[in-house]
Length: 135
Image (cartoon, rainbow, N blue to C red):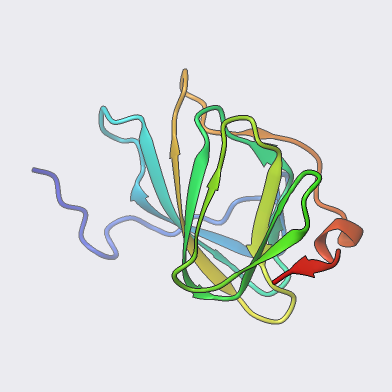
């Protein structure tokens, strides 16, 4: 048995290469064991978001608090609320983050394939981020 007590692992603040705005990662399952499953609690400050990206084995998001947005190439931007769960299929080009005026925290669950959990692309433009939303 391995227990990570709250506060044992520091929060991580990713750089601007793959994110716009202030984003914080708090590891839940960080891959420091044999499991290929990685789980992060990710907090996006208002307006913060990922760059476009894909996942080789897909990704599940579960919204814990706040108000968020998710975009998938060719689809309307979706509004995310606490309790919502989103599945992105393997290779699905997408982004996600907070709404413009409210922070959002979600659990991000993905599986490592050959040591890789994501393929990162260009930043999401303000035009894409502010596109009409599907409610």
